[in-house]
Image (cartoon, rainbow, N blue to C red; front, side, top):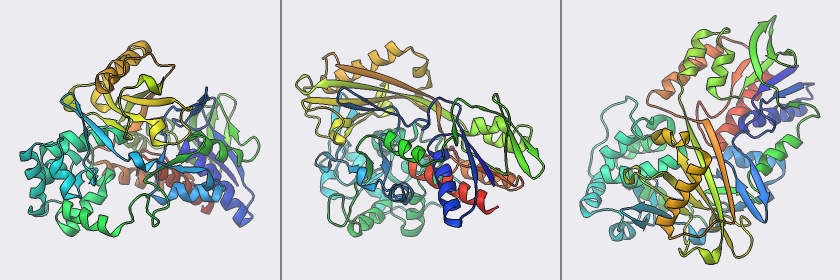
Length: 464
């Protein structure tokens, strides 16, 4: 059987690795081809080691509470290479009103789960605190229509909860506008909590009481985990398990057409024939490949918008940084009108990111709410990030290392109605036997979700 995978990001690599695994388990001969337009595998995941610093271009970790990435690491035999966050500093700072306010202990993304830290917090006004507390008395929502995350938080917890916490935290995950973001597609847990238990605060408080806390004997992993040598280690390990010659770099898929019972992929180097094809590229690239195969599917895929972002990473001698850096990083509400979306204190959050006596700080810019930021040149982006670090942290020293990475049209936006669109796309694809979708554009943008989508597509391809 000939299986081709288009796109060598994390979803495409997970699909390729799963093809190899399942073929071995079934003793099923498979000819695997992985096509990647760039000169390397990994998509937005790329790690650089230089001068004792470990610099991540894109994602620097993955969530442990979704099992698929951890399960892949176990099967790859590299679980022992994973490292936890340093939970001594498990705190987030919110830059508001010219000050850095700690997010109250027990505040879980949208709502507080501990009374004392919430009441004492300087981040919220007393009217804002009282409005959040009103959630315990509010009735359930009265509609089954898809709702934006912004509308949900405003309705349940009030404007301050949205503007000062939910929006900046969500911007760090989706680089999105919460008033456009579909709650059902991005955070269905909160929708389920409201439907099942009515109050978000009470439901999360009960769940927190039952769950083992990070750092306790009942929780092996922190919420975020990464590799000792950076996320590039995950890419390199998967790539090393592929058959020799299976991955073709600098090979862009330019067309797709049915040929008999299979498919023919056009490339500049000549056609590639396959019995099954996993389309693991961004949905806008997949749309171009399908425009003559199924114009309706292509149109639906093309309707999924993407946002662009950039990361600026700086290294400093620790003595040059006046701030205590006693947190994982800072997030910045959009209402502050800053260029920074967030900044991660990478060398605090994870071990081995900077040599002794130095720190590494990574800044995030752009996103759906500030697309114009990415129109600036590299020097301007670096200068803006440094200027705002100076304001936030009192950091005026010249960095000993600077890196800027751009990620154009890399983050799919799950706008209201997203799941309805995805279901329509899946119905169209079901009528195209031998073609399977994978990637972050459909049912989850995180690394675990991408791993799962790639593996499910591979299994479907081999079961055909």
